[in-house]
View 1: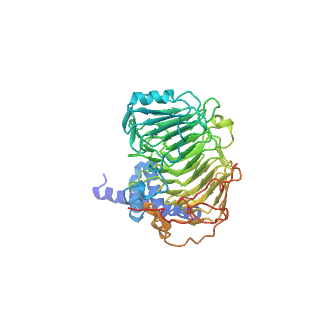
View 2: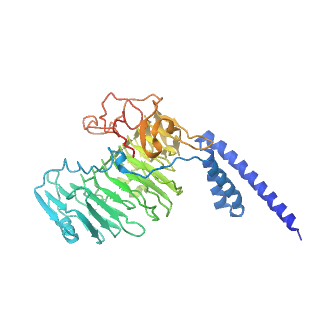
Length: 497
């Protein structure tokens, strides 16, 4: 029999060999990443360590060693203070001015309890304004169907809180409002999901729900707070989702889609000036998105949004992606008109996207896309993927990389791209802005890359300049403007605690 000493000698020799093999493999992978997309060394150590532990459990000790080395080397960026939406005055709900531009109603219906609220929503007529008195309402009905009448742009149906921000609608079922008719305006509410593990939708927008406006609301703990899709070849178009605040109080364990704004098949939608944060998915494929447009959609715009994938100091793993044209994709047979692409002529511009452990912008089968004037901090950059994708990528400021994957085409110009520090993974954008880790992007140093003229999608029917296009900080964008990143200047744009 072997002596205990011989067994120990054999054990340490084996561990030593495995460690050297592991380190050799890490060296090879690290070199490959340097030449490909410059993955920081701590990330390489952690990724390979996790792979060894998962695929080779008999030598898990080598994986643990690599993980510990990666953790020791890493100086990752994270959101190191409590998130306060008031720190960004140009995005999220503005309750003081929420109703300033509402059309005049021809009839006001005041409700004070749940039964009255459901009845008013079921029976509303064009020109009605449903005013929900301040307080909390508990809605346990499976879904609330909106009226079958057809409001018009001249006589919409308005559903609003008596005082913006002072009405709490708590849902205990998977789905809240089902909107299937055009010209509804929903504004001023706090929608709270109280389901186990999480509610699915606060609003489900389908079929003929054109010209919908969802503004100045708060959505808490919904896997897909706003879900848009067609039904029987009827598709909701020309919608606006603006000045809302979406967040989770804890990671979702659902296997279903975790994407606060989940937009399928709708044309001409605008998603702007929203705050979307902490959409972390621990169930299923563990992939989550802040917002996406997909399934054969045309002319989508995502602009001036603040996306913070993770505002904690926890590394939850999985894959958190900021904004996407195409999302995770949909089978061609299920897309609008069986389109060969996920999106066509769609734009991602003037957004700030931060703390995503995957890419900040993902173009997946997005034809004729434009990705311009965004700031991406502590993300893996921008991916343009699959042969159906072609994107103009210009005037962005980002850490990470701009990648063409699986025959995707990215036409790049005048981007300021800084790779993370290789040895410890810190973000080099820290030297350009005042406190980017906590969302203060006040410039502290002049950006050095050249800028291109601000691009406008040629497919838009009306010139964006004439319709009041603004940057993230609310500055009007003029036809001659050239600037890098999400704003021309940061005056009164960032108000840190």
